[in-house]
Length: 450
Image (cartoon, rainbow, N blue to C red; front, side):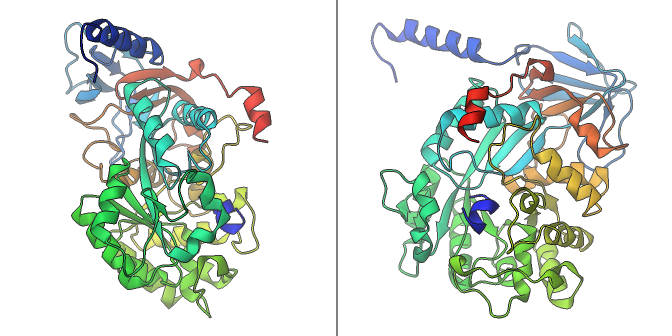
């Protein structure tokens, strides 16, 4: 649910072999531009930013096969395999694939809109997204299509939402629950003190979700219990920074893996504390200034290794009297200076009037208003996003053995963060997607969602 919304809004028998062959051929034809991911390709000559924060590697070599990086380093230290296809990247910069850690692809679930949004994300350099609540029936299909290369799309990970029973009277939830009584779907379920949490989390896992999103109207003890059971079953836990009536400091003490929306941290200062989500009061602008209570929350987040999903740009996209836009960048900057890991997400709607992912706006705002350095914000948009997903050993940084997700830029983003907009090639799972092959959304689709 967007911040705008939060403020308002087997085959058998003799036919099996030919049908399987046809299926494989169809999948291959559907895959987007680029060489087979099984071919050996060496990307040579670029300046490499690996996502760890270490200094760039000049005149680098990245060897890719089977969707993975098999060798990486400087040309002086890294051998190009005999017979490998060479891609010259002299004068270019390579970064890890960006991670948009806060999207909403299926609320409402409109497949053509979601696919158009995902296509633009990919060609903007985004190779992974985290969906933060929507109709899991569509999300599971999109995830499969992306994994098989049937659509041009980042890889997709998604959450199942839990909230207190009172929240499900919110009319916004119905768009993701057609055919279900609000609060009973396994991907969007009410929870109270009588809920069988083991069954709840198992059902959520069955939808294909890899994380639980803790949203609203839950006491601290129940947040902590849900978090413990989710972790026991191998799921990540992603919470709003304020889960009425549970204050941010309590959320930060509950064991969650990430907290969303920097501006919601301001509710630590609320007096009185809103007891229900629908009763959110305007946040206190004083939260943008350093103060002991906010410092305590940020120190807890840093100590407990909680990643802040800052979404600093969203209040600029969807202005609201409750959420002054300058608050989120100020708090995100303070969080970073307290040692809190920050990731990047958009929480935006499908506005196809803009050429690039809104994630680039988010990144630029973190540099210009939250005062992260370009290297810091690249790490936030790559390595830290991978940590949120529990995939820090697979994606987010570039190293031998890791997934071949990276972006070739025409210009250096360390010189000017806006150079992230100079995408030339996106490589996802070893497959190339040249920016020149991007086809924007059909004008009719744009008009339909205007």
